[in-house]
Image (cartoon, rainbow, N blue to C red; front, side, top):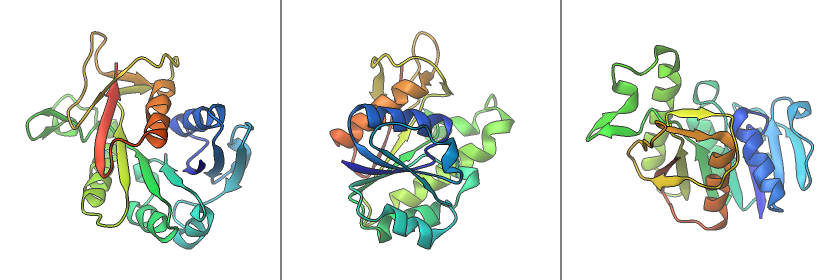
Length: 202
């Protein structure tokens, strides 16, 4: 497939880029500084600004799938959503956050007393992004939330999928960037969560 990846040089974005490349997909890898994008097969590094709707729309044209892997506090969800719609991309996948996942009926993780203050702004911005997507009538979107601990690790291909509830395993609630990338690219290749949020964890 032809995939456009916004935020291709970031922690999650770089792992998604490698997974897409390894599976043979053609990727337009977009970042503010294309020099920071890994040089991989089937990858075209491209400069792009998440706040430039017209520029983004042009970059996203002629792609089967658009993936957004930018920080919520470093972008405008309306610009990203509108650019994806205007580009006529077939699908739009968002690297989500764990803060909007439920830990009890109607209780989001971000609203629990133990949630770190340092991550609260990003988590609330992610919840807002998800709310906007849920009101979207045209775009075929998917929002993939990681587990609470989202960090560098190994690509094992062994993980669980869930819905709107935080996944907690024997080692707590966690997922590696590498296995998150596997789950996201699996969703690109075998769509199962149209206009829905889902989550991945061990």
